[in-house]
Length: 275
Image (cartoon, rainbow, N blue to C red; front, side, top):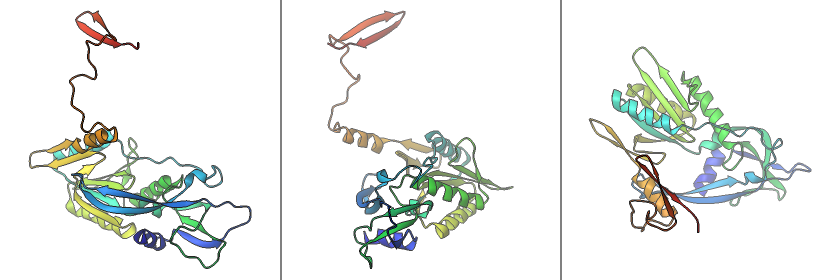
């Protein structure tokens, strides 16, 4: 919690002010979660301060909320191109991404647990975006897009989370999914340059070679890049309470009385009916 509060103070997320008349501040709470490595082992425990955005009023506390995220087809295409062209492909994580977005609306929030104030009637006037706000994702997307364009990256029209930079001898591609970033290209110098620029403006965690992204496990060798979703499948089984279930060749028994067999040419169709 202390690390999160320090990050909020460092980014200037709010100002402590007296609550204006006739204004109802939104609440906030702490959310705790565990981050995992690609192999399922625990990476770290994390505490995050989240605004109760469900108390916001549209047209007053927020307006537009939509923001783009990378398409899975684009992710797979970038990985395929990296394999074909022998590109370097790395992964980054932006620290406290949503805290970098600049708020255009006046949003007031109750003092978070753990924060001391000098007056009893003070509240937080949010200057920067905060997790839980309706517009948080959009504000971060706008901030990052403007930054990448200032670094001579061109936004793709087919996927607005895809950015490219090309010169006579180099080609660099950057793909964004909220705070997870893939950067690939044929020049380690260009890749390092954008890493340094991002770290200077936002603070990033350099995760090195791409190994896990959107449920995809990525394995690298000299000849190929292989994709696997073993952990993702195991997580689905665990969430549905079927982790210890035995596998079956079909979802249900075709000989069951509730199945009706229909012969259409050389194709057999089984229809399941209710009792």
